[in-house]
Length: 411
Image 1 (cartoon, helix red, strand yellow):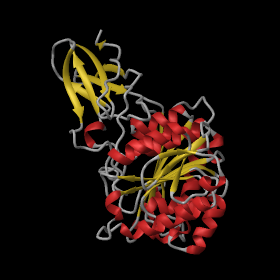
Image 2 (cartoon, rainbow, N blue to C red):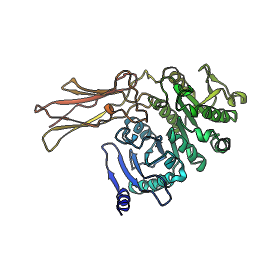
Image 3 (cartoon, rainbow, N blue to C red):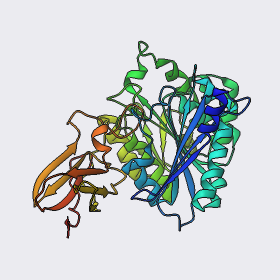
Image 4 (tube, rainbow, N blue to C red):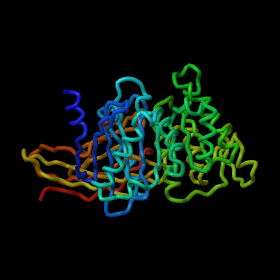
């Protein structure tokens, strides 16, 4: 009886209007044949008055049903910037299991059903019925990559682009699956991101290295649109690789794919060619366009991107007074896709007051691609009794500072 009451409780939903866009939450209990314990879904839409063009599904790995440690990217300014620019919904599933990863990352275990349930629920509550039918953009990490690869095969033609951060060793290690995947994904823009330390046999994640390369070579020998990038600073963690994934999705969603540019995966040399031999050369990574190829070269060498042009949009800062009479500062911001967010700077009376940022050696994201703790704040309380004027800016990955937002104060 207690378990039944718990499942009924898990089936409740919540709706909240975030300061920036609309944020929806849903908890889906398992069905009779499902293997997960329960599934939490979070969805963000920038503007519900505009039709949705796609749903970006950000699927975590096997050990990440931990929102406190790795909160969903529906509240991440960087991912929101991508979704906002292209009229996409951001959707994050988080599956809780009692045992192994296959209790959710096999779509037959119930995760596919839960996703469809969430899409229908969010479509109704957001007033955007097209959410149930628009294409998907899939991002997966580790076990999430395995899930994404299977969903591409199960829903041919439904996916616009996909980025895999590690994983897929069972799928890409199976010749029969590779044959099915090649058939449906040959023309699909794909990005494979692996860490350099995963290439070492002593890595616990080395198991996916050979299968990934085999899948990459299979696709490229057939002229497949697949790019491979190795993060020189990382093992299996996501770290700064979001700079590549978001930039890749930005190109595809912008419709700026211009075939004919390739990257030599051995020398990192960028090549331009339109002949059939190059188009099917397994030693060359496919590039969506020449601009992305430059980012690929930079990231492959440095493990990050350092844009020369900084953020162009100033953050929006508002102030209110809570029931204790304290001043509450709240903000929203829109970073550039190629630069993301490295620090938040709050100024009081024209002087730097709070610097919420990362250490020089810190990555832009956690191992599971959530924003680091120091960058998750969306509000701050100033309990000083004096009247002050406040303003705000933020820094990108290279330390470029955004324009300062309009000064705010309590009337």
